[in-house]
Length: 517
Ligand SMILES: Cc1cc2nc3c(=O)[nH]c(=O)nc-3n(C[C@H](O)[C@H](O)[C@H](O)COP(=O)(O)OP(=O)(O)OC[C@H]3O[C@@H](n4cnc5c(N)ncnc54)[C@H](O)[C@@H]3O)c2cc1C
Image (cartoon, rainbow, N blue to C red; front, side):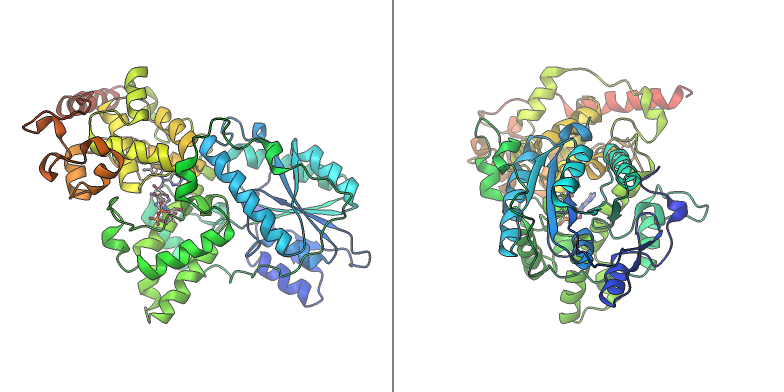
């Protein structure tokens, strides 16, 4: 059985209808995944229901939780750590750090609502069955994830639970639109962003987010939980000081981030979003990835903000910020329809690309020692904070792919391990976009010049000075090309000549164009 069957997905299904129906005393609702009409058993016994939390670590706007609450009995909130089931994309080191903090914050949220999080180790199916037995629950609810391995796992779990007579339902909590609902005129998935996003915007906006339940009935005390530390998510060597200083993981921190961004940076976002030296973007990406905040909440938060500012619906819907949220949707759309793309290019001609193997250049890039300050600053920001500005992600990715001719998959793997917002859909899109081999990608022949990119987007060199303090005394004129400064600077020389590397890259590209598939 498939977890997602577009053919069965009916219009008008979804959480809001479900909760509305139940609140109105009607116990029929529509599973947003299968489109099937579901009848909940009359709630006489008030059996418990399990909510299986994954990338939806929030109480507000959480369809699975809301359905469990509407079910009537005690709610058993469960987190099961089963990284092997996500292979080959088990969470990387920075993601594990974030997950630990996010779970700690979620535990506190649940405690404040009178409940507690049950933490277990996988396998997921066996653990859910154990919990059904231990709690006497008759249902399990969860929200969708879109990574290919997780889709396959969830489909098996749903089938197995239903085969044993349990209710197992799943919902959309992480996207504005389910990926299988958006199609082009030929009924195929979009591969170009603009018509994709136009199509999304032409649809009714997402339903209003449901507030967090104030009170939950806790699971019985006999239901045991592992302590969070038992998951061993934190690094053994304490390298996470920079991450701790940079972030407040959790639902409360996420909502605060959104509020501050709207109040302080939204107006100038269009012009400042490309400036890594300024606080010009929302820094919501890890919160969105871990589901501490939903895109529906962002959409409605923006709509409310816009209405206070008397911005028309056309103005905020066409804003650059919402468009970026559209790229997030597009990334998930592509991953869902082309699940091979984390490892292979979407454009098949790129399979023949003559990537180099060069461990020492790869190491220099990873450590921020390429000799190009804007590249090095980005890689050091990433290492220190687990995040990198989008413009700099494009510059460092272009450098790895086109100046060093190393495979984009090498870069994607490093990002996967070091980003706190590592997201299979968005990381794949970002790398394939830069390499020119993905959906709506930048053409391969567009090779970013690390000097002029630095001069354009970090004009005063403040970003470079922050992350490469050995250059802090260098005048602005040389900050992006220290090798050209009149007096010698203690800084690694460039590991490649950009001018030469660009020619080599374009020749390699011309070769794959001339070889038939
Ligand atoms: C090589 C490369 C790898 C990337 N890997 C990831 C990744 O693993 N996880 C990730 O979340 N983003 C990734 N991105 C996209 C983008 O860089 C980040 O989403 C963005 O920098 C996050 O910062 P922000 O929250 O301040 O974004 P904002 O500019 O405030 O944008 C708001 C939200 O829109 C989404 N968004 C913004 N830009 C993009 C984009 N170009 N593509 C898709 N979604 C976008 C994010 O969810 C972001 O939080 C990658 C980009 C590149 C070029």
